[in-house]
Image (tube, rainbow, N blue to C red; front, side):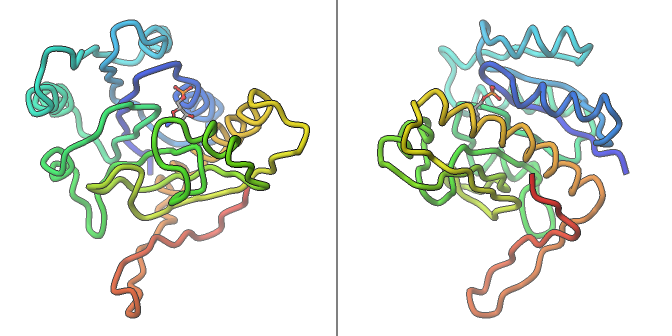
Length: 215
Ligand code: GRF
């Protein structure tokens, strides 16, 4: 099936671009319904408009979180969306907002985070992992839940940190992995290749993927 998605993004937009590239080649069957950014000067707005996507700027400045989310929801309500895709969206999302995207065992909202969660949550994950001196870092695509950088892990892959790495080289290696991993995660969802399985020991549901080839 073709996955109907909407993006929330705040910045550069390289993950949005990577996903659009895969749609363009036909490798990923997805229809982008719209993109919303909370940052008026974010490069992702221009990128999205140039790609012919319905694009909204809904600044959060001077609004309460609830008021801002109400405006975002109002924009999203005009579309039929299977998944909300967070791509560098630098805002916490409230449980009330998530309720609008309730799926069977998870919320239909996914995020990419530049670390091996639950290590290094937060906004400076590459910097934190690099300065900690990890030997292996990674990238995580996860379903969003009520807590920040949390929720069931859909895909997760590692990349090495070499002793001679500069922070820039380390980040570039991670970003290249993000650009491979996020489209792959969406492809799995579009192909219905993600199943939630109950684990009686932890009493939680975990996503399992069928036929995943690592990046
Ligand atoms: C990426 O590193 C992503 O993992 C994180 O924010 C960054 C967004 O980059 N959540 P871009 O806007 O997709 O280029």
